[in-house]
Length: 272
Image (cartoon, rainbow, N blue to C red):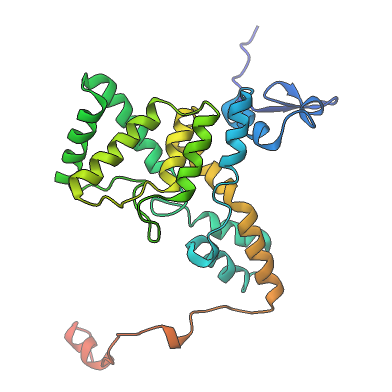
């Protein structure tokens, strides 16, 4: 008897049958109306039913970014794109590409926290001592610590503080968060920048890491949080009637000097 061929794909996320769609093994008809959208999002990504506290925290996470007006490059890109390609999907795709190390995405901070906590546990040092040693090493190497700083907020990022208070109240604040807070404090002391905030992206990374999400999953959830705002901006742009939105010359500066093509071709060795 011939051995069965290996499956092309193996997935435990969902399954469709003639009777129902199963989400992580649970019939969708049983889930709908019993679990909230944030709780279902947790179930899909983590693969297990969240505790009530985790479900409430997911609601806050998915409500934590929403929109940055036109201060978010992804939103600006989305509006520019749909002014020449008037489709919602085109705008959403452009907005997603704007998530990265310097905006929206908690992935770098999440990886920094995950790896840093593991190194601290293995070091045998106290939390504050390890944080001070790590900060000194990173500063000597001129490496950026993700999740610190904001172009507007000083002292405290109110969004981050709200996330912290809620996480503590829901029982999803833990060792990873305390370690990251210790690094933040050590960095402020070492640099003398006592008003440098832990921003919302950094706080989200610590909380989601404590909840068991991978750094890559953190980026997906952060983007999920921005979608209502991006949809609103794209819809507004589509209804504006503006075609081919560009940067006007009045706020652009060009520093290219006039050049001689014939002279430069000759200098480069081209025949006359």
